[in-house]
Amino acid sequence: MSSSIRVVFFDAADTLFHVHGSVAEIYLRHAVEFGFPQKPDSLTAIKQAFSRAFREAPPPVFAAVDPARIKQSERLWWFDVVHHVFYRVGMFERFDEFFDQVFRVFEDHRSWRLFPETASTLTRLKARGLELGIISNFDSRLFPVMRGLGIADVFDTVTISSLAQAAKPAPQIFQVALEQHAVDPEEALHIGDSLRDDVEGARKAGLHAVLLDRDGRPYGVGVRAIKSLEELFPLLDWVEE
Image (cartoon, rainbow, N blue to C red; front, side, top):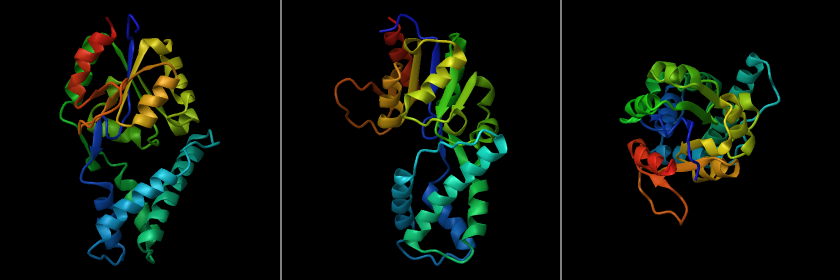
């Protein structure tokens, strides 16, 4: 184990904050406004279709480097995902108008909620003299969301896939983040809710990794898991021993 952790990285969505309600609920509510014919099983169907579309989507990595082109690429990526959702559950005439609205909804911080312990955890980590960073496959809407939720200023760096031109679990996105802090991989700890993207990805890049699983499911030997960000502190002390 490393003798000193200098940087703690976090995934963003479902680690530090979560959607207020659910993605499927938001899609359905706004789709109905634009003429989607709701059925008794629509919510379940949208939830299942979104899981499949998101899982099957290509990594959110684009050749564009100009900020405006990057944002356009991000929007087109999400258009394809949402289009695939409603292609499976029922397309409707005003889909494009619906997508314009729902894309903006997820840029609004009011669509998100911090987990109860997020703010205090970040404050305590900063008080220990640790640098903090985000490593996320979220798109550039993350920046206004973080500002609105009041956590933007506590982070020293934010590394997202569309700007890093690499997406978790690829080691390149972790390397980009490390370079911004000028630290070696063994001096960094990454926390996230995805075993594949956050734990396996970080480990392949040489970082320490902790899985955040708020449901407390059992995992195999060698997976360090916590149910709350507050549980990070005794684990961090152990990592630094």
